Image 1 (cartoon, helix red, strand yellow):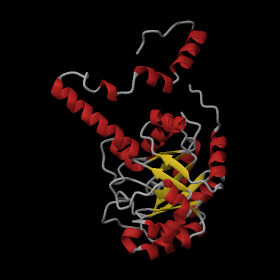
Image 2 (cartoon, one colour):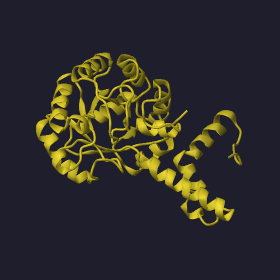
Image 3 (cartoon, helix red, strand yellow):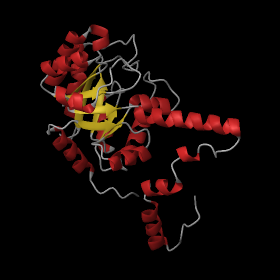
Image 4 (cartoon, helix red, strand yellow):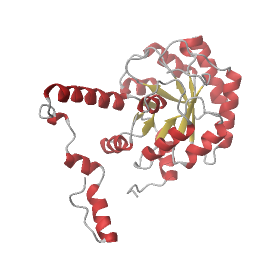
Length: 298
C-alpha cells in the first residue's frame, strides 16, 4: 500500500500539459523507488528509468540482455511511489512492440522510448552500433502508436544514427519517425551545441536531450538546452553513479579501518530515511487497522 494520490491518467495528463509549455522538463533517472521519491521531493518534472541502469543493477552490461518482465517489474515499482510521470527506456522494443506498449501502459508508466538499433544493441555512447533500416523502425513506431489505449501514453523514438550515419541522415530518420506518429524524438549522442541547434532547426516535434556523463555529448546546462528549444532533458545514470561511487568508497574505508566512524557523515540518517518512506503514516495505519505497534522493528 502507498500514499500516492494521483492516478496513472492524471500523471500522464500532467506530462502532456507540461510538454506543451515552453519550460524544459528536467527528468533524472531513478535506479530504485526511493530515488524516485527524492526526485519528486526536490521538485523535478518527472522520473526516468534507464535501460542501462536496469542492466547495470543486475550486473550486466548494456547490450540488450534484460527482458520485458525484468524492466517492467522494476519500472512499475518506481512509477507507483511517485506522483511524477515516469518514462522508461525499452531498448529496441523486446520481441513485440505491441506487447511492450501494452505492458508498460498497464503498469502505470507515462511513456516509453524505443531505439533504432538491432536487438543486440549497445549503449548509445559506445562505438560500433548497428542500426535497423529506417523503414523497419517506422513500422515499429506505427505499431507502438496503434497499440496504445490512451493517447497521453507517449511514444518516444530514439535514433542512434548520428554516430553511425552522420547527423544529416539522423535528421532524415527523425523526420520519418515523427511522420510515423512518434510524440517525442530522442536524438542520441549529439556532440555539441552546434549539433543540438541543427537538430532543433530541422525538426518540428518535441525533442529530448540526454545529458549523460562520460559519453560523446558535451554536458550543457538545462537553460542552454531550453534556449535551443529542447523540451526534455534526462540525466539517466547520474543517481546510480553517485550512489555506487559513495558505496564503493565507503566499503573500502570500512575494510581498511574496521569501522564506520570515519564515514558516518556521508550516510543518510535513519530519521531522513523514515521521512522519505513515510514511516509514521504506515506505522499509524498499522496501529489503526491491526491494533499493534511496530516500534523497535527495523
